[in-house]
Length: 256
Image 1 (cartoon, rainbow, N blue to C red):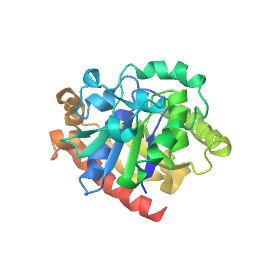
Image 2: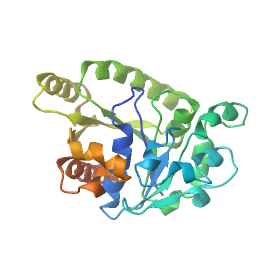
Image 3: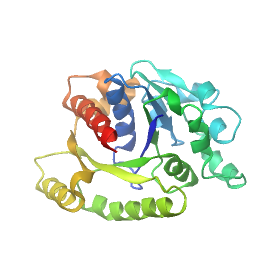
């Protein structure tokens, strides 16, 4: 059975999608079967995996509404080595349509249960808000990976996200836990980032992943070519960090 993880942060622009794409590719590089679920209507995770969101005939939108299943809607990201349940702007309409449906918070969980035995990992790229889509992701997941920049405002937002995860665990998904905090876009030359990083380690201890993702131009360039950074320039510092993070995730999951 797959281990299912949300990549979530209520703050935008913190590298959620970059982390989702490259973690999927990084884990796949260790010969693990991975499914990436794009739950963001912007569809950046889909495009960054080399799949044209405008050409999708079936997507996570149809899956959530019960019009198709995951096995039919998924596609293979050839260069990343993982499968993708894609998204496009149709998904924005699902917010309204889901409100009227029964079990609206658990529709993704039910859909993923059918294919769970086909993967070791299922990663869910959530939108940067606590929406019904994000709630579906949190209800389907065993745990949450929180990518964050080492900046003051990121610490402020982290407290809100932790409270949200605790509320979902209390009322909707008792299995949900924080798997770890991932420091991204890290620049060791900046004293503030070093200080915030130390504060995170002091407060959260082993919940902070030992892998640190550096600020890296090659990671930023990769999506414009429809490639994960791990496939675009495997030798870059950013790609090597995500491959190392993939190994750390595999190891951490084995101890859960």
